[in-house]
Length: 307
Image 1 (cartoon, rainbow, N blue to C red):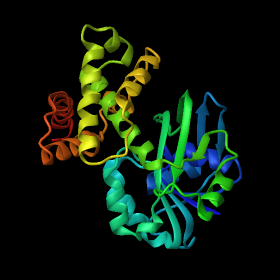
Image 2 (image 1 turned 180 degrees about the horizontal axis):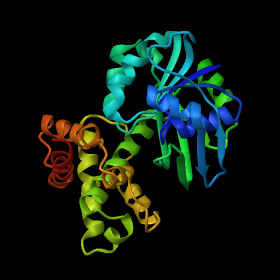
Image 3 (image 1 turned 180 degrees about the vertical axis):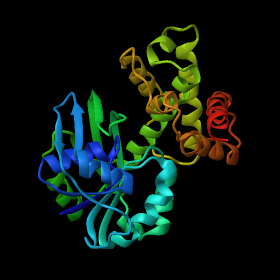
């Protein structure tokens, strides 16, 4: 099985590296600058689950020598997503399976309208990782999950083949029969966590302890849940309480990846996550004061650093 991983950063680099470590035939589609760095230094992972370094196979978007791929994992941030779609077109064959690893939902419709609808399956990941100035991937928590599955929930032959190839890694890579529900649940969680931690510029512990802190988090989840139910998302009845329980179980110093990006003055995914939710809220006349406050904070950050 030939696997193409789009991006060799905190997500694509980590899970692609773990797949390569287990013997999967992995190639990374990267930019020329990152390709030079990987050729010189290799791909290095420093992880609580064990370090790994190797010299990866890499290509750039204009390199068509490798032909088509069986599976393409899109491990980029949402603001690089449209460019990633253009970059992979030459590597997609009739039987290619495309698995996005992005947060959110909006990108699924874009993929299905660009490629054949049955070429796209669901995917999501939970991992606390970042790339340091030297290009080393730092993975720092127990959680390192990559989940994928058919939107129909069926265990098709291609899912069986992917599962056989992907299931022997040091990361937790597994199939799901409820991937669409999993993606919406993850969307709710990451939007709530990133919205509140970026608003307070704090790890989750002090926010939980602050007066009205947990109340604000709970209300934010309730607003997001009301939007998702209105658009027919397949979410559980008690998902807001389960998300709040997750928040309470998180380590005191846990930060969202969006918060870490803001601390490094980097681009953020606010439009893809919170902005899209607010678009759905407006279309359905749902009042969302907490979500608007979180989104306005992200817009302020963008105006300060990128306008």
